[in-house]
Length: 415
Image 1: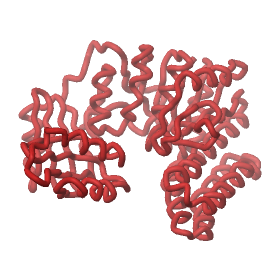
Image 2: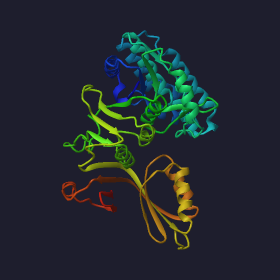
Image 3: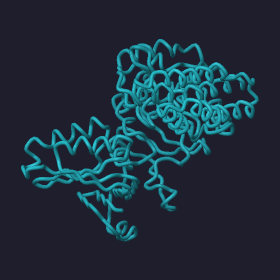
Image 4: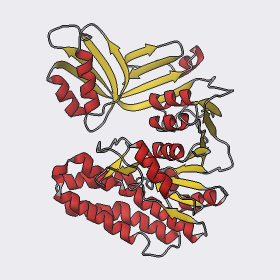
């Protein structure tokens, strides 16, 4: 059994869905297809959530029609599917938005998951309908009934044993293809949850683990895992094979090709992960596995934009290491600010975090017990397997705020 995961870019329109159909049709094995929301649907639904919480229901429903439903209707038409395809899903989404307006007291995270999860519901339903129309024996699976999570909305934790039991029951082998949603699950009360932004890769890895898949393949808009972003570095080079360890380090460092949590479920059962280009299905791409004969022997350049440097000092000049670190990181964790770089002095700690909507609240919480200053809109450049030639080629940076160097890695934070 194989697992294929198709991201939003690969199913952004009718051409992408046709291409998916071609790839799936060419696979003779039992197949689970994990699908993300189409194109920019998640962003559009996030806008709808904001409108609801700002007490603008009419505008939220209008934008839902304009930014989400109309795009899916266009794809339905271009794929020559019946016009009523997805009508029940559209109505369920409208109902979810209306009900969210009546329960704004539930808070942003729960409302977010209840609405944004429909991006994957719509895309997977559309993909399944298209596969059926071209003669593929496909069954749609509702991951809200399969993937059981806690109630940590927007970054839910999966209840592994119960989820595996349900998934093994749902994927019963009576069909050749099963179409599933990435990114979403539900808690014990049946409320939709999400696994974190870009969490569809993680969903595919969990499915592969729970079903003992022979491999998991992520179909992307790049040839595989490259040593740099090809949109910035035009001579970016394909990394044909790398270990689970290397993949985790690259993902944690900010590489956008795979989600950081994807690797562990696969490593636990030694399931290989392939990253391949959906526009060139015959191209082998990159392989991630337990042991690599090649390894990474070239510099890998990772650029993260819009990061924030927060400097946190004690109020009374006591040593920050005397219990202060625990309080600082508890606040960062509470507001879901993930640290990618840290520097300590006697009375101050500086951390680099990704920017998110909780930043201001986190800073206010820190200021209750610490002196706090911060710089936002920064860029973090990481070079793994660095060498003098690569650093000379990239050159110096104006307004460098922090530099860290180990044996094989350099990190540079700059404006």
